[in-house]
Each structure stands twice: as C-alpha cells, then as structure tokens.
Length: 555
Image (cartoon, rainbow, N blue to C red):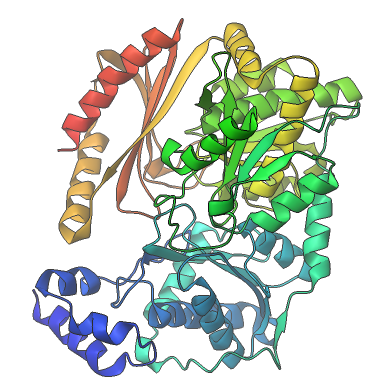
C-alpha cells in the first residue's frame, strides 16, 4: 500500500464523523480493504457516480455525495448564476434518502433552489419534473438494477436528459477542485429554498404516459397480469396507470411489493434475469396469468415473461420486447391514421439491427446512437429544436429500456409497462400470443439472436487488466468464432457524427456483429453478440463459438 493511500485513510479516520455507520467500518478495514477504498476517487462519468456504499474516496457515502454536489453547485452557479435550480429524486436503495437529503442541503447552502420529491419515485419522474418546473438540472440517487451494496448519483441537464460528455467533463473539473472535508453539510430542512415537488407534477406525468396509447378499438383489458416492482419505486405509478386504463386483473408480488433496498427475495434486482423474475413466475402459475412484468428498483427498465403453448413461462429479451413494441406501434399508428409524415425510431448501436428492418418496412427513419439512453434523449431534443418532436414514435435499447413519447428524455418503465400491457391485451383479444407475433417477425425478417456477456474486473488490478484487453481489441481482430471480420467500426475516434466513445463494433460474415465496450458505470467489459441465421439452433451454435472465444480472451 502506498504512503499516500495510508495517509488519506488516516485522515478519514480522524475527520469522517458525520455518518456513524462509517466510523466502525473505517476501523475494521484490513490492508486490502483500505487500498480498494482509497486507491482512487469514485469516478464521475457521463452517468454521474456509481459505486459500493461505504467508507472511502472510492465509495458512495455522504462525503463523496457532498463533494460531487459542491462541484455540481459550482458548475451551475457559474452557468446560471442566482437563477440556478435543481430537481432531486431517489429510489429504494440503502441510504438513497440520506444521500438525496445531503445533496439537497449542499445545494441549498449554495443558494440553489431545490425541488425534491417527497417520497421515492422512478427515474423518469426526475426528467419530467425538470422540464415541468423549468429547473437548471436534476439529480437522481440510484444504482439502477445493481445489487444492494451499490448506490449512485445520476445527473441531468436542463433539457431533462442525462448530462452530455462535455458537461460531465466540466463538472468533473469542479468536483476535483473541491476538498472533500471542506464541504458544509447542513441539516436537511424543507424550508427556504428547499421545497417538496407537488403531487400535481406526478399526476401530470401519469397523464402524459396515458396519452401514449395507440389502440383505438375495444380490447379485453381483464387479462391476467402479474407485476413486481422488485422492491423498488414502480409500485404506485405502474399500478395507478394500469388501474386508470381499466386493466382490472393485476396481481402484485407481495414479497417484492414494498420498497426495500436489501432486495431480500431478489439479490440481483434486474428484470433481465430469471432469478429476479422467479417469484413472480410462481405467482403466474398460481393465478393462471399469461404475462408477468417487472420493473427494476428505479423503474426505468422493464422485463417480461409470457406463457408458451406448453404452459411454461418464457422470458423475452430487451431486444425481443423492443421489436414487438416497435412493430405494434407502427402497425397501430398506420391503422389508425396517427403515423406522422416523417416518423423516426431511435436505437443504440448495440441494439438489434432487426429494428431498422421493421422500421424500413413501415417507412420509419432509424437513427443509431451510442450506448446509453441519454443519446436517444439527446436526439429527441434535437427533433424538438427543429419543431419535429412529434416525428419521434419510439426509442429502445437492448438493456430493457423503452420510451414512446418525448414527454421525458430517459427510458421509462412506467410507459413500458403500460404499452406492453396494451400490446399484450390487444393481441390476446385477437387470439395471438406475443410469442406467436415474435415468430411471425422472425419469419418475415429472418431469425436473429442477440446476447450480452459481461466480464468483471474488480479493484485496481482488474481496472488495469481491463484497459490492456481493450488495447488488444483496438489492435484488430481477424475473426470471431471462425466468422471473418469484414469491417471494424471504431467509435473512439468519433464516427457517423457520434461523440467519441471507447466502443468497437465488428461486422462479421453472415450479416452478424460483435460489439465490445467498457461499462460506463461498473468495472466490466461488455460484449454484445448478434447472429443472423436461418434457425435458432444454428444461431445458438454460432453464438457459443464466439462466446467461448471471448471467455478465453478475457483471461
């Protein structure tokens, strides 16, 4: 351990006294724990902060949150002066409410007006409130779908979109100039320039989501649906909008109904994985439901499972659900005469290219953006500036994020849950299952298998190894699983008008692709494999070859 790390640790032992939870933790850290907690500052990237909750410069705690807030305050004061204002929201995670109140107090001490949600609410409500209240920025305390040991600090701009790369760089400079123990953290009080956001804002948000409906005929809304908020923020807004839209047969998973940052029945509260959905699937069998949906803790992602012809429940991927929604929205809009003259669909470069095929079929223009829903939000903003916001009909990413309207600038699982239920009920009324419809799409456009593989690299040693592996990828790949690389798209230099990003997309034989990128929020390398084939079996065999090759490459 370096002397610098040891000195910083000792300084924290002396000065980190506000949060009683940190005092015993600091005393009990061993050598390895000290190094991991203090070898670097918690990274502030384009998504803000995210890390393990605990003591140290590389952890989420009241001091790192206060430091980030002071840096953001300095940035906002420089840009907006005395008119600077923020919206603050938080989810069900451990210490989310504490961190939200710390942020509010620090903003307030800098004479910045604070509008804070009076209780936990989904991520998209922060984006909505920023635009509704016309504030300068927003902060959401959340770590999305990560395990309970994580928390985070997500920053939004005045447009309701997550901050740009340029803004993040400016804010980082301000944060780095702040001495962590110099930041004053007053007691949180809702008075002066700290106010609660009124209920009418949430009501307005719900009404905007309801406007996204595309069905104009009578359908059976008494279909049996099981819903789980996975102990997060989705319970009230999701059940409210379904009830107000006359979905009358909703069963909520009791064990996962109330907010609980420990996630006792789903240690990894990610609706992408079966383990998180398992309890809900048991409910489905009990009540005979055909559809199960779950939203992650901050309610910006939505996953679903549907009953197949054998009576078992099959999870759909983010790509599959997105493709179904895209086709459904396009077909209904054309049927009902509500398709704009120049419709636009936006997706990320790691999302299934079948999306473009479907969009082309309906005469919809596709815009491809970098990974991260903020780039979809950015494009909606550009359309708005051109007075073409209504041309946007749908945006999605493979990581279970969807949005059907421009009322917010981030993915919205309240909207996704509503639209999925409407789509499900419409097809069921017409005697079609979602799996039948998905098979129809594959028969029309060809089968495509999309998978994601994540490789973890924890600690300082892991971080260095991850960088070395990315260097090897940048040096070039000749093939993946025996399929020749035909084109390499290197986004690190900027490509197709997109910002520079450390992402490589390899176009390989057979209309397939492999994308490699470091996660922006976790110590992981992510590999996205997309295989086009004439059957599921062939695609799976080809995918396994590439996945095995990648596993060896990451050793």
